Image 1: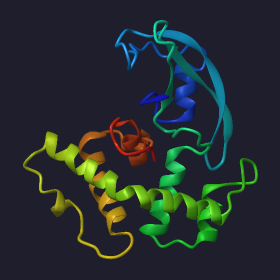
Image 2 (image 1 turned 120 degrees about the horizontal axis):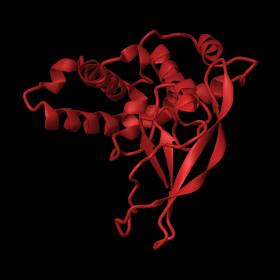
Image 3 (image 1 turned 180 degrees about the vertical axis):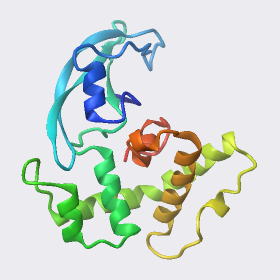
Image 4 (image 1 turned 45 degrees about the horizontal axis):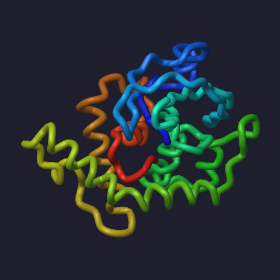
Length: 204
Protein backbone atom coordinates (compact mmCIF):
# COMPACT_ATOMS: atom_id res chain seq x y z
CA UNK A 1 0.00 0.00 0.00
CA UNK A 2 1.38 3.41 -1.00
CA UNK A 3 0.92 7.02 0.02
CA UNK A 4 1.77 9.53 -2.73
CA UNK A 5 2.99 12.96 -1.63
CA UNK A 6 4.74 16.02 -3.17
CA UNK A 7 8.25 15.30 -1.92
CA UNK A 8 10.09 17.26 -4.60
CA UNK A 9 9.37 18.16 -8.22
CA UNK A 10 12.37 16.25 -9.62
CA UNK A 11 14.41 13.16 -8.85
CA UNK A 12 17.44 15.34 -8.12
CA UNK A 13 15.58 17.49 -5.60
CA UNK A 14 14.08 14.42 -3.95
CA UNK A 15 17.56 12.94 -3.53
CA UNK A 16 18.93 16.20 -2.12
CA UNK A 17 16.15 16.32 0.45
CA UNK A 18 15.72 12.66 1.32
CA UNK A 19 18.62 10.70 -0.13
CA UNK A 20 20.16 10.14 3.29
CA UNK A 21 17.22 10.67 5.67
CA UNK A 22 13.56 10.15 4.91
CA UNK A 23 10.83 12.75 5.40
CA UNK A 24 9.46 13.32 8.90
CA UNK A 25 5.78 12.56 8.32
CA UNK A 26 2.88 11.83 10.70
CA UNK A 27 1.71 8.67 8.89
CA UNK A 28 -1.35 7.07 10.52
CA UNK A 29 -2.54 3.49 10.25
CA UNK A 30 -5.57 3.12 7.93
CA UNK A 31 -7.08 0.48 10.29
CA UNK A 32 -6.56 1.69 13.85
CA UNK A 33 -5.68 5.34 13.23
CA UNK A 34 -2.58 5.28 15.41
CA UNK A 35 0.64 6.90 14.31
CA UNK A 36 2.91 4.51 12.44
CA UNK A 37 6.62 4.10 13.07
CA UNK A 38 9.44 4.52 10.57
CA UNK A 39 10.31 1.12 9.16
CA UNK A 40 13.36 1.38 6.92
CA UNK A 41 13.54 1.87 3.20
CA UNK A 42 14.04 0.09 -0.09
CA UNK A 43 15.59 1.25 -3.36
CA UNK A 44 13.99 1.41 -6.77
CA UNK A 45 15.06 2.45 -10.25
CA UNK A 46 13.66 5.66 -11.70
CA UNK A 47 14.04 6.70 -15.34
CA UNK A 48 13.45 9.93 -17.18
CA UNK A 49 14.15 10.39 -20.87
CA UNK A 50 17.91 10.91 -20.46
CA UNK A 51 18.92 9.69 -17.01
CA UNK A 52 18.35 6.77 -14.70
CA UNK A 53 19.16 6.15 -11.07
CA UNK A 54 18.02 4.60 -7.85
CA UNK A 55 16.12 6.44 -5.15
CA UNK A 56 15.17 5.38 -1.61
CA UNK A 57 11.50 4.76 -0.85
CA UNK A 58 10.74 5.04 2.86
CA UNK A 59 8.31 2.88 4.78
CA UNK A 60 6.18 3.16 7.92
CA UNK A 61 4.71 0.30 9.96
CA UNK A 62 1.88 -0.03 12.47
CA UNK A 63 3.10 -2.20 15.34
CA UNK A 64 -0.43 -3.07 16.38
CA UNK A 65 -1.92 -3.99 13.00
CA UNK A 66 1.36 -4.99 11.32
CA UNK A 67 0.50 -2.92 8.26
CA UNK A 68 3.32 -1.37 6.25
CA UNK A 69 2.92 1.67 3.98
CA UNK A 70 5.44 3.11 1.54
CA UNK A 71 5.58 6.83 0.72
CA UNK A 72 6.16 7.62 -2.97
CA UNK A 73 7.02 11.03 -4.44
CA UNK A 74 4.24 12.19 -6.73
CA UNK A 75 6.43 12.11 -9.83
CA UNK A 76 6.17 8.31 -9.67
CA UNK A 77 3.32 5.87 -9.96
CA UNK A 78 3.40 2.46 -8.26
CA UNK A 79 5.48 -0.13 -10.14
CA UNK A 80 6.41 2.28 -12.95
CA UNK A 81 10.02 3.02 -13.90
CA UNK A 82 9.50 6.23 -15.87
CA UNK A 83 8.57 9.46 -14.09
CA UNK A 84 5.09 10.81 -14.74
CA UNK A 85 6.17 13.83 -16.76
CA UNK A 86 7.59 11.51 -19.45
CA UNK A 87 4.22 9.76 -19.73
CA UNK A 88 2.47 13.11 -19.80
CA UNK A 89 4.83 14.38 -22.50
CA UNK A 90 3.96 11.38 -24.68
CA UNK A 91 0.21 11.85 -24.18
CA UNK A 92 0.33 15.59 -24.86
CA UNK A 93 2.68 15.17 -27.80
CA UNK A 94 0.40 12.66 -29.48
CA UNK A 95 -2.92 14.26 -28.57
CA UNK A 96 -2.19 17.98 -28.80
CA UNK A 97 0.65 18.12 -31.35
CA UNK A 98 -0.10 14.96 -33.34
CA UNK A 99 3.57 13.95 -33.24
CA UNK A 100 4.43 10.68 -34.98
CA UNK A 101 5.19 7.72 -32.74
CA UNK A 102 8.80 7.53 -33.93
CA UNK A 103 9.37 11.12 -32.79
CA UNK A 104 7.78 10.42 -29.42
CA UNK A 105 10.01 7.37 -28.96
CA UNK A 106 13.03 9.60 -29.61
CA UNK A 107 11.84 12.27 -27.16
CA UNK A 108 10.82 9.88 -24.38
CA UNK A 109 13.81 7.55 -24.30
CA UNK A 110 17.46 7.09 -25.16
CA UNK A 111 20.02 4.32 -25.49
CA UNK A 112 21.71 5.52 -22.28
CA UNK A 113 18.53 4.96 -20.25
CA UNK A 114 16.14 2.57 -21.95
CA UNK A 115 14.90 2.48 -25.53
CA UNK A 116 11.11 2.52 -25.39
CA UNK A 117 9.08 0.87 -28.10
CA UNK A 118 6.12 2.35 -29.93
CA UNK A 119 4.04 -0.43 -28.39
CA UNK A 120 4.92 0.83 -24.88
CA UNK A 121 3.97 4.40 -25.73
CA UNK A 122 0.69 3.25 -27.25
CA UNK A 123 0.00 1.31 -24.04
CA UNK A 124 0.67 4.45 -21.97
CA UNK A 125 -1.78 6.44 -24.07
CA UNK A 126 -4.43 3.73 -23.75
CA UNK A 127 -3.99 3.60 -19.95
CA UNK A 128 -4.49 7.35 -19.67
CA UNK A 129 -7.37 7.32 -22.15
CA UNK A 130 -9.13 4.61 -20.13
CA UNK A 131 -8.83 6.67 -16.93
CA UNK A 132 -9.45 10.10 -18.41
CA UNK A 133 -13.26 10.09 -18.01
CA UNK A 134 -13.12 9.24 -14.32
CA UNK A 135 -10.21 11.60 -13.67
CA UNK A 136 -11.79 14.47 -15.58
CA UNK A 137 -14.99 14.22 -13.53
CA UNK A 138 -13.02 13.83 -10.32
CA UNK A 139 -10.94 16.92 -11.05
CA UNK A 140 -14.03 18.90 -12.08
CA UNK A 141 -15.72 18.05 -8.75
CA UNK A 142 -12.52 19.01 -6.91
CA UNK A 143 -12.45 22.40 -8.63
CA UNK A 144 -16.14 23.08 -7.96
CA UNK A 145 -15.68 22.24 -4.29
CA UNK A 146 -13.16 25.09 -3.91
CA UNK A 147 -14.36 27.41 -6.72
CA UNK A 148 -18.14 26.85 -6.90
CA UNK A 149 -18.68 29.81 -9.23
CA UNK A 150 -16.39 28.41 -11.94
CA UNK A 151 -18.07 27.15 -15.10
CA UNK A 152 -15.97 24.03 -15.71
CA UNK A 153 -17.37 23.51 -19.18
CA UNK A 154 -16.24 26.98 -20.27
CA UNK A 155 -12.67 25.98 -19.38
CA UNK A 156 -12.68 22.98 -21.69
CA UNK A 157 -13.38 23.23 -25.40
CA UNK A 158 -16.25 21.01 -26.49
CA UNK A 159 -14.91 18.10 -28.54
CA UNK A 160 -16.24 14.88 -30.00
CA UNK A 161 -14.65 11.52 -30.63
CA UNK A 162 -12.53 8.93 -28.88
CA UNK A 163 -10.33 11.40 -27.02
CA UNK A 164 -12.97 13.94 -25.98
CA UNK A 165 -12.69 13.00 -22.29
CA UNK A 166 -8.88 13.11 -22.44
CA UNK A 167 -8.94 16.60 -23.98
CA UNK A 168 -11.39 17.63 -21.23
CA UNK A 169 -8.99 16.31 -18.57
CA UNK A 170 -6.02 18.19 -20.04
CA UNK A 171 -8.01 21.42 -20.40
CA UNK A 172 -9.40 21.34 -16.87
CA UNK A 173 -6.08 20.17 -15.51
CA UNK A 174 -4.28 23.04 -17.21
CA UNK A 175 -6.63 25.53 -15.57
CA UNK A 176 -6.04 23.92 -12.18
CA UNK A 177 -2.26 24.01 -12.57
CA UNK A 178 -2.28 27.69 -13.51
CA UNK A 179 -4.59 28.54 -10.61
CA UNK A 180 -3.00 26.47 -7.86
CA UNK A 181 0.49 25.29 -8.76
CA UNK A 182 2.44 28.54 -8.90
CA UNK A 183 5.95 27.46 -9.93
CA UNK A 184 5.10 25.58 -13.10
CA UNK A 185 8.71 25.52 -14.31
CA UNK A 186 9.55 23.37 -11.28
CA UNK A 187 6.39 21.29 -11.28
CA UNK A 188 6.29 17.62 -12.31
CA UNK A 189 3.00 18.08 -14.19
CA UNK A 190 -0.70 17.31 -14.13
CA UNK A 191 -0.32 13.55 -13.75
CA UNK A 192 1.74 14.10 -10.59
CA UNK A 193 -1.03 16.30 -9.16
CA UNK A 194 -3.62 13.65 -9.94
CA UNK A 195 -1.48 10.96 -8.33
CA UNK A 196 -1.46 12.77 -5.02
CA UNK A 197 -5.04 14.03 -4.81
CA UNK A 198 -5.70 10.84 -2.92
CA UNK A 199 -9.18 9.72 -3.83
CA UNK A 200 -9.13 9.46 -7.60
CA UNK A 201 -9.76 6.24 -9.50
CA UNK A 202 -6.13 5.24 -10.04
CA UNK A 203 -2.66 6.68 -10.49
CA UNK A 204 -1.43 8.05 -13.81
